[in-house]
Amino acid sequence: MKVHTEQRTVKIIGAMIVAAQAGEMISEITMAMAGGIGLKTVSGVIHPYPTQADVPTEEAIPRRVRLEQMSRSAHREYHSAA
View 1 (cartoon, rainbow, N blue to C red):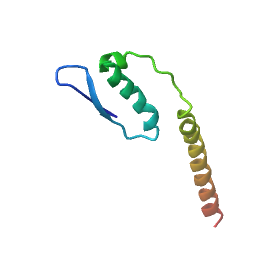
View 2 (view 1 turned 180 degrees about the vertical axis):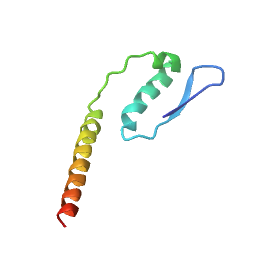
View 3 (view 1 turned 135 degrees about the vertical axis):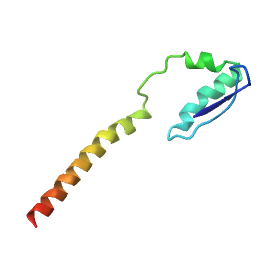
View 4 (view 1 turned 60 degrees about the vertical axis):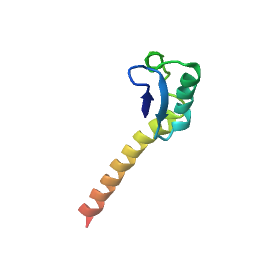
């Protein structure tokens, strides 16, 4: 995420977001721009975590690690039996 502000101010004039949940993130920036809310105010807001959008990612990480561990274990067993 990159937020563009007016030079020497905190007024948001644009943003670029490249992320899986970019659609969820951009609404906060557009609301701040429409309301004339500066970057300093936005950054001071408490943001809940995790959001529903984070759940698949948070769940996938431990599963991926378990799958990688299972794969390594099966690979070792296969090659030790040969």
